[in-house]
Length: 445
Image (tube, rainbow, N blue to C red; front, side, top):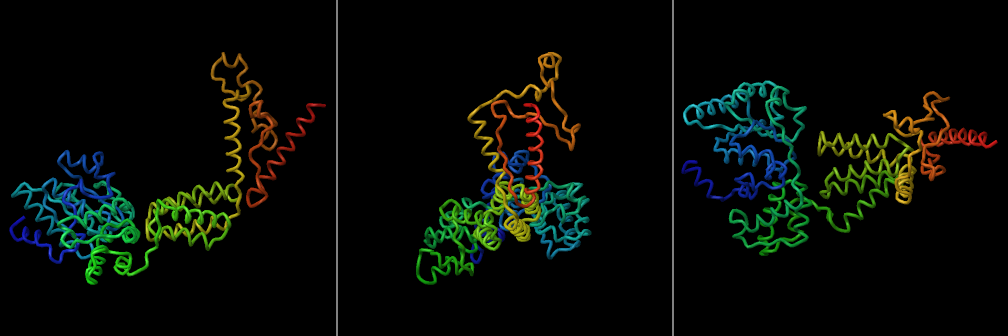
């Protein structure tokens, strides 16, 4: 850093709060402990004194640029930043030539950071390949899009893909305190933030640290303009230009909205289910929480009335993991509307509870001899497996036999309902039960 760069770095006039508070060391990065914590891959790479080429994939405001800069600082490499939106092949070549010169003249490595690398076309990405392969530059690409679809396979194979997560609420709350107490932040302005305004800031940020700090800075200006030092809810909502849905993930309202969501789907009210589902997400709830609840619901409340419900729910979860927000909201809406409209049966769920109750009451009852495994001659001589009937040899793939332990021989847990697909399951089981009853009656004659 020369004298002019140093002067610019110490003069913070006009520099946005998010930039002033940008961490200089990897350990100070918030919300990505799976990468930057003691056991994280980036921390371990720094201990070895080298950084591999990386693709950092994650939502906006999660620290992709910050991590790249921290890595360059800590391995004492030159940091060259290129925006894929504005740069072309000529800019890439210029950056590579500078990196080549620095390595030859000063033995200095270069980290080439390509922001929004998914916006580079194939020829631009191909232009990076030989230089990454030869180690002229260490490439760190940042993208909000799935690199499997947006980055050329040849370039992707030369990079390690690291997934960044939305910054959790605790991390965002910590950033508010850091901004208020840091000399590079708002310390000299003597401001405080009330509890409600803090919650609104966190909810409005939705996991985006940069958005949180930008909103806080604007709210601080609005507050000071009125001669106050306490930032309130109104300041924050004016800063973000919208009314923020309040939703305490750890409080009563969280459980109320989740309950309303589940009960609306169970009651087959598609509109209410969509309202509560997206009310959670818009207020900052992790969409994966909503999707996991739907996966549970698909078996607990839809069950065999529509076995496709579970497939839709799990497919929506996997689809969301691939595409994320905002497009992933379409997958969530698909699953919510399907599950809410589907026929409902909790028969399999109740069957599990009934079976569990008997297991708790009776413990480990002996398995009937004819069902036991007989891998040795001794076991066979003791009667293990003797008398077992192979169902595929029976009429319709079924034989009349006893399967439960003797003490539970007449137990019945699953009571299918006469609804949806389960109506057919019920008819089949009733037909099989009639065969069993007839066979047992003939034995007693």
